[in-house]
Figure 1 (spheres, rainbow, N blue to C red):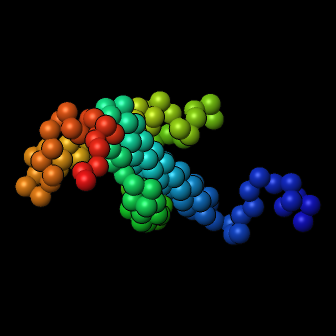
Figure 2 (figure 1 turned 180 degrees about the vertical axis):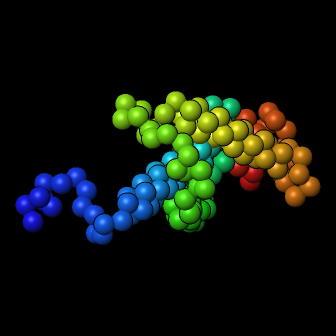
Length: 156
């Protein structure tokens, strides 16, 4: 019992396949966590980019607080949780182990998430501009009116 407490790993049986299976499951958990992070970083950076871009351009708010809450709770949360249940990749055991020095969030993950987030933010801003300026259902305001919306006075 003392040896079990001091051991890094305790085998439940005498089968080497148990170790291989545990390593494969650990790699699947690692892959799923990285996919979860990549998805959430990309989508949340897209929200930040859309809100910051609209503010910098002088546009009205592109996402109201309730809409932002809805996006974060429903359209971000459920798909992110689903990503955590992906089965192990068939090639999980073919690649070498990750070095201890390598961070879990590496440069590639940050660059990819930022790129996708900026693209999503630009797409949201383009959609907002299209709706205000060109959409048949939109208000058909001019770009000057849209960027100077705070100077509008109420019509009596």
